Image (cartoon, rainbow, N blue to C red; front, top):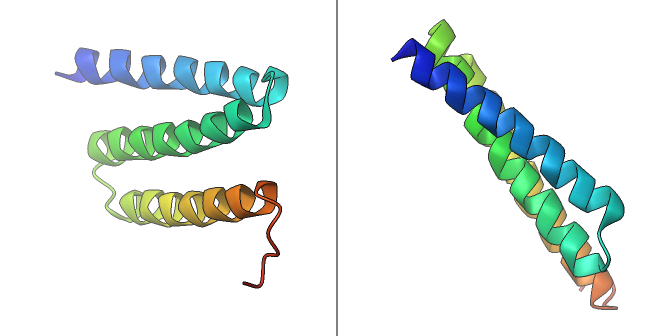
Length: 88
């Protein structure tokens, strides 16, 4: 079980680097936006695996806070790219 979790952890970290590449080199703004959103989801998966392996429950709180901030950031960036004012 631990070997499988380590494989998943390294796979998620590799996917984070791929998403980061898409954010930096994305041909369009929409690709960058999707890359940022997926990167946030992958980080939450990494925190969940680390919380399970270390038996520290407060790491899950970090993951929950990360996904909330990622969601708010994605909405804000999408609204900004839609040429709307942010205070509407």
